[in-house]
Length: 97
Image 1 (cartoon, rainbow, N blue to C red):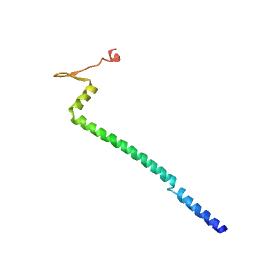
Image 2: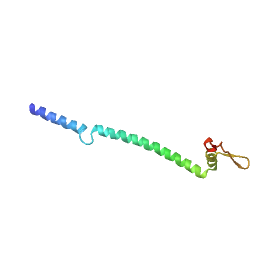
Image 3: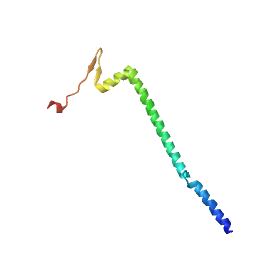
Image 4: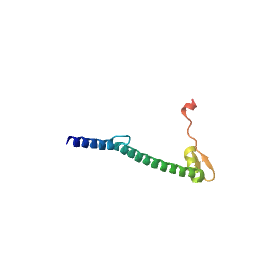
């Protein structure tokens, strides 16, 4: 009877070690799975961003309407009937002193 209890404890201990012990325990595998899922989501988001920036870069280099819009926004250019007009802001107060 005592021998049976000892062997049962050894088997239960071995099973517990197999599930929770060692280098790749159940908790560690679950943590790795969660981390992998998080990284996959992050990679997908970054891939969408890269694709969007690639499309925008292509538009900037090839589309004249996009180039004109950027020129108006960044450099203050205004389109007239037959010429391009420039719009200048007020000078800084620090420069006028």
